[in-house]
Image (cartoon, rainbow over all chains, first blue to last red; front, side, top):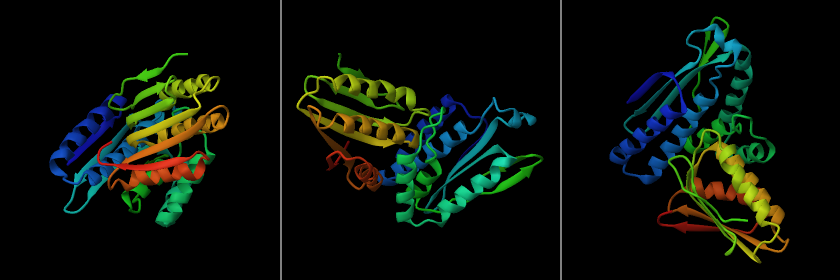
Length: 158
Length: 127
């Protein structure tokens, strides 16, 4: 198991990905699973990286608002990746809707939805495509588990 | 114009775009946090190339994997090639994926469905 809490930088992500890649070469025999886990991990961690906005005054209410947490663990027959970051309370309902929509979809529907967002959208300035959660659901083949915990006016998503 | 050669890194692919052979190769992985900066020179190069292309243009995509930020840029790259196709050059995309790598195979099929360029899916032992 590997866990972290603190500021997520590009350098930190590079190190974590490198550690996980070499670690998985030892513990995971199937190159297919290795790739899948790595791929999902990249999306999860880059999602954290992109959604911590130090310039956002709304998240400045908290000393810790720029920090995030993640945990990567291997169970008997699965890998588990958990991440958590602060988001403004007013973004909770739209994010919840998006996650519910993704979780309601079949494999085929996810594929179509991915193509729709891919061909329709523009990249944000940060280079995000709005595809991360869809991709994680597609590649993992699992439903996304999530939780919003209220912290005064700011919510925590996990 | 010059050939475009970029060495791969842990987060970006190796690029080898050869104006003399008309062969454009992307190889490795593409997982930069923000892929816009990385892909801009690639799209600019295609634009320059389109003024005097080879009769046949071959695009070899040999990616191990890419993140969703890159996926959008790869689509834009294909759109640039789509605009060039039939205008003095015939563009062929070869999408390579490793045996059993359904995710990369599906990713190729996704682009194939969106982009009107001839796609050849090629399964290889190692990318």
